[in-house]
Image (tube, helix red, strand yellow):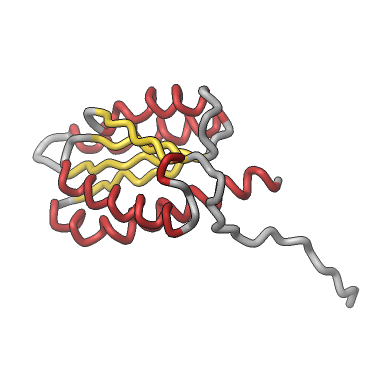
Length: 155
């Protein structure tokens, strides 16, 4: 009691120099996805990731991210991966299926491969929500990808 114990803490590291980042981007709701990608690329470059070390793979929609991410992770070419997409609620139950299965699949691939994957697939009620969130979420996705790649190397 009363001991002064100091714990080791690994602070976030946002140095992307020498990192290879893979991005999957769905073509559905393209304007929002383009905005996410633009913000993400800008932040990756700002963090020191070289343009030639960023690979972008286009996929049809949110459900196609999973198999593509798995193949990319298994290639051992990438330090971190980012899934960019936009799912906008329609008038059918399809939204819930796509949103839930996309998120579950991305999480499963990450756990199966030990490659960090940032889920930047927005689930939205309206397109306007996507336009409001795309810049912040794209920037955040880049920061998380670099932080997690550094963290995986350190633990």
